[in-house]
Amino acid sequence: MEVLYYRDPTGKLNFGDDLNEVIWRELLPQHLFKDDDVRLLGIGSIFNADFVPLSRTRGKRMFVLGSGAGYFALPPGLENWTILAVRGPLTAELVGKPEVAATDSAALLSLLPQIVRLAPERNATLLIPHHSSAAYGQWEKVAAAAGMTLLDPRWPVPVVMEHFSRAKLVVTEAMHGAIVADTLRIPWIPITIAPDTLPFKWRDWTLSLNLPYEPITVSASSGWEMLHHRALKRIAKKDGVIAPALVKDLNTKAGLIADFKERYKSVPEKTSAKNPVKKSSAKKRVLSLTRTASSPLDELFINNAAKQIRQIALGKSYLSQDAEFSRAVTQLQEAVQKFVSMAS
Image (cartoon, rainbow, N blue to C red):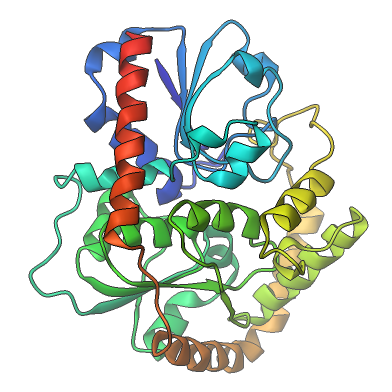
């Protein structure tokens, strides 16, 4: 069996994706991993044609446990897949199977206390940017200025879990920062930094636990990050759409589904995961010069972002109700049991 999950082609880590390697190895019987024709689609917004084109799934026994739609059109050939659980009701509606709406399968961490043990004293407030924001911004300096602890999503899973073990509050742009916090019963607050933050995947998950999604926008932490945000808006406009975090009327299921279908009309011919865009040497030099030229303003950006983050941490936090969380995890457990029975 192969567990399919996103791996950055340049080798960079992202703990939300990397949880797949930890959770499924701990949870599933080892004999399943010897079956070469089984493919498991687990944690991540990977239920899409870019990640699992026909060339990757043809002739394989495909199973879905907690994945979600996002970023691209739905995968071709899914009518031949066994879809046991998906991340939430939006993905379930897209595939025409409302009964499989469970929650993100990272919630299965609640069944694996050996992966993370909460410390007796938990007094850290974690700041978790999305991995792309972490790459472009100065969020470690923002966290320090705000009196918080940075959790970089590009760190290895054991380091990430050690940080969660000492947390009393999580302020996060990374969705799996919120999911892991909720799973460990740590209050969390959603923020938006980059304009390409995808509300669809967040609402898919929060709806699965009967939670709202009301992110607070935070300014860029550097001049370079601000320029990156402007570039993201231009790219979206060039593609004839609005950057996803800026779209209005995404509080209803109908609005979210309509935006998804409009945004991801076509199926890509090549997968971006296997065909990363390479920057020329000249372009790299220009980008380096631009980054250097914008750096004198960074202190202003850092202080402004830190001020916003401090205020946000004093505001409303979220945590799913115990009953809702238990219901969703039970549904995931039942789906896992069906998978083991069917794949064996």
